[in-house]
Length: 61
Image 1 (cartoon, one colour):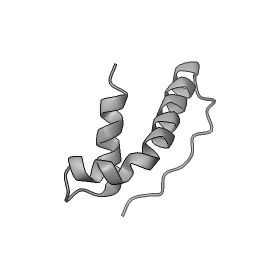
Image 2 (tube, helix red, strand yellow):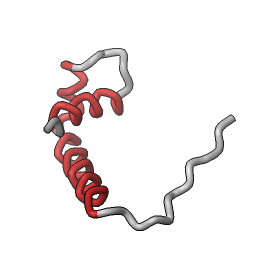
Image 3 (cartoon, helix red, strand yellow):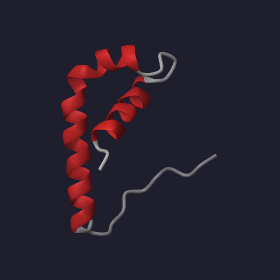
Image 4 (cartoon, helix red, strand yellow):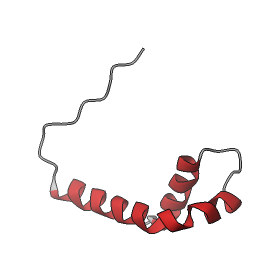
């Protein structure tokens, strides 16, 4: 068994806050398109994995 994850008590750095903001914006942006992504990304994968594939393509530098 694994131990439950604990939330960090450290204050996030400026880069971490920026990355979290980018990721949350990308998640919100992709919510309406989740059904469409199911058609184009691995049909057998969980919907979270499909969204992650889409996000990786959106957030590429």
